[in-house]
Length: 213
Image (tube, rainbow, N blue to C red; front, side, top):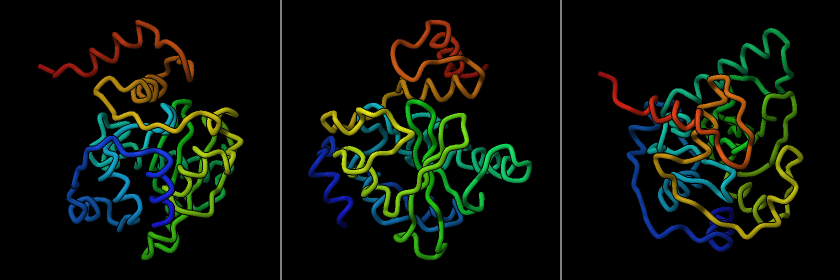
C-alpha cells in the first residue's frame, strides 16, 4: 500500500512485530478495519510519531490509546452530544466517526467510516483540541501520517514545525507522556501540551495505575 510504503521509508519501524487477533478485535468493534492500519499496528506496535501523534492500538499501553478500550465510545458519545445540542459543529454524522489516534495536545483523529463496508476507502478527520475546528484528509491513516511527517500536508490544528522535524517513532511505555497528558486532561488537570509534566499529575497517575485492593 502506498501510504504504508511511504511511511516506513520515511520512518522505519522499530524492528518488532506484533500480530493482534484481528478477527476478534473487529468482532468486538463491530466493524472491519483498514488494511493499512492493520499493517501499521503490526509493524510499529503501540507508540507515537514525533512524540506527538499517538496511534490507537489494540495493545495500547493505557485505555486512553487503546483501540478496543473505552475512549472511542466516549468520544463518539461526546460528539453526539455536541451535535444534538449544537455545542460545537460536527461536520460528519457522529456515528460514522471512529477514533484512531490522539495528539500530545489533545486533538483527536477519527476514521470517517463511510462506506461502512469498505474500510480501505475511509478518510481521516482531525478535531481541534477543546475547540470547534476540523480538518479532513482525503486518504488513509498511513498516507496521512506520511504526508504530515514529510511536511507535504500541513494541518492547521497541529504545531507549525511538526513536518520540519526528522520523522521518528517512539514505542510506548507504561509511562508514555502523551497517555499521561490525555488521562490528566480528562480529569480536569491543566497540563501544557509540551514540557515537564507537573509532579502532582505524575503522582496522581501513579496512584491511578496501582492495583486496587
